[in-house]
Image (cartoon, rainbow, N blue to C red; front, side, top):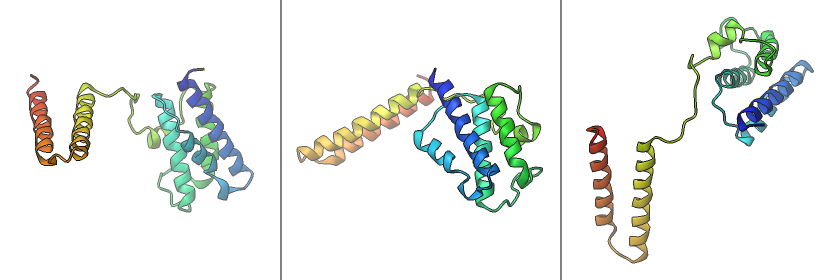
Length: 167
């Protein structure tokens, strides 16, 4: 099972657990499974999981605030049924989310993908890393820090200028 499939399976497991807790009449325990899920640190690039995660987080927020109805058209009693429909979509037994879930919780309206760092991010991270290393080395040998800092910052500025000019 890939990490993406594992994330989806674990997410479904946690959402089902919270739906069951809710239906058993334990609203004070609603959200415990979500906290466990966050502790695990699941990552994904699947649009369906983005929508489901946003839905799940919103449901917990509504419960925590005493159902102020932040989401027009969704009544307090609608959340468990909508949660089950979200589970059905994630498990593949339904093709799409209910329109109200799609309207409120599809924030990007497009597939979101977690991508690796861009070249700029990698290079700027390296510049910052070497700036910190220069500082630590200068402190280790009691050399003045200021010239090292100026040189590092000048490198960052020059690199940014070249990047902006696409040189």
